[in-house]
Length: 309
Image: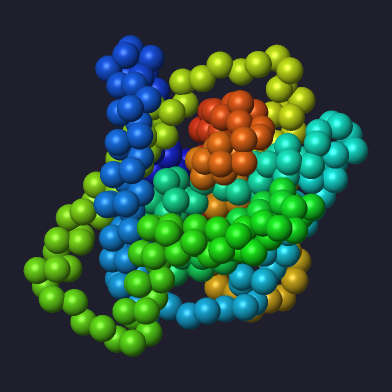
């Protein structure tokens, strides 16, 4: 247990340091935007790139790994979408965003550094595959369901999905890393050291930016939606991933399965908030869901990691 706490306590400690300093007015929303953009565009792409290079001997694309993971993602998306429509009486746009909250873990800012910290650079390969494929599935689902009735803009939405995928810096870092490994591209020592120095700033910057964004107020009308999202995201999602990998003989390395379970137990991704703003729906609920699931994950993630280790 000490090993788990030595990984998770400093990790979440940086998050809540950001929250505390935000509460004390040392940092504001503008500071958060700057740090988030610095992490997203400057430090996290080389972080993924460098760690994939370090894990070059383990790189492969495994359908036995990615297909089961995506089946669970799709199942959560559709089941929560219809529960939101029928039980919570949300409209289609809000139901789509609720389902995205329920299925989209915080891979970029939390999953990548936490998995590599817990399982070494070998974890960079499975999490990069999850990051690439899962983001494509989640963005496609969201765009399709929100704009399904608007046929005039359907092609524009397809272009938007492709553009968002190409524009995602973390995805680009992952893809470039895989490309460099597959084609055995050797980096100059100076360039490698430059990227490695940048990558070391990724974890504290990303976590601190999350913390600044956490200081938030929750509206009482959102309680049912947020409780449901938290239950699905932090409990149901990792359990489903556990069941599909451990009860079916899929010939997947244990390390990859552990990465998949840990990723699925993470809180709601910050990208979901950006999507809610773009589509102008479920914005306050999404912000509150990120806040609540991140707080709760300080207890749930160490337990999951303890069981995995």
